[in-house]
Length: 349
Image 1 (cartoon, one colour):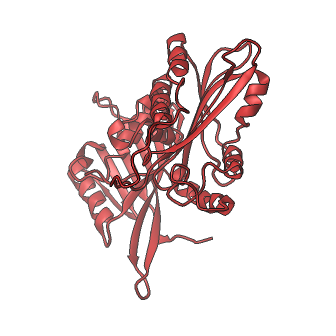
Image 2: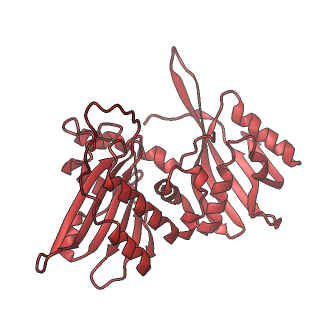
Image 3: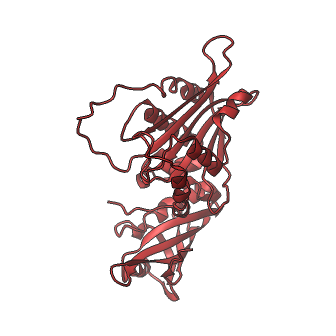
């Protein structure tokens, strides 16, 4: 099994859970509650989510005459991941926009693309029944479901009858109570991903689904195709079997001031020793910047837990920077330098 590698943006986003929990006034119904008990059907919670993404209400789109299909994705741990919107504003081409939640108060720019006619047709056709209710399983039906994703699906569309004007539809649904809303949420993420080639270049084996890939895509900057290749490579650093293909010839590792260079074997051994001593560390990839097609710089963190007073565990964090260069061996960029800082206890502020 591959180790779990998360973006730093997700770690920062976990602090937003407390804000949303404060807005939940009562125990949500099963289809509305995320893994933290936040009522995703609550108008107040949804208003806060719109602020989180910097988006206007679907009703505002309807008043403007925009035709919209939009999905908000919350993962199995109650974290706001991404919002995907297909919008055809009056007099404008259909567009895709992938929106990311604020981190430390800053709103990242959305990823955008024009939408081909055949994709736009699927966006509309597959949305016809997303808000229909299916026959529910009997109450005594035994099932087990944990850490379910939650989807909020919205549409602004022309009325079906002449003179009706624009209409709004909305459905909140979680994966433990699957229905047509969840099915459409999956359709939307699958249609969106190929329209952003640098996102589609991320290795699907390292991510749960297309929405997770689009979330990780937020971390790519500059030459994002080169950055995506580097991200895939760095994701292999937690696997002892795959780490040998990560470091290039004449690479070096500087681990808290102790530098190792020379053979690839020596560099890999130094990396693996540092990862395992004294407690296993996990790598969390941050920003990956393609400076050129053949050169990428990446930021990351190593996180490990050590024994504290009593039965407590202390989170220790070390900053990591990677320099990746294409050494013209036909394999693309490889890590030529990894620099790991000293581990220190993460501040709780």
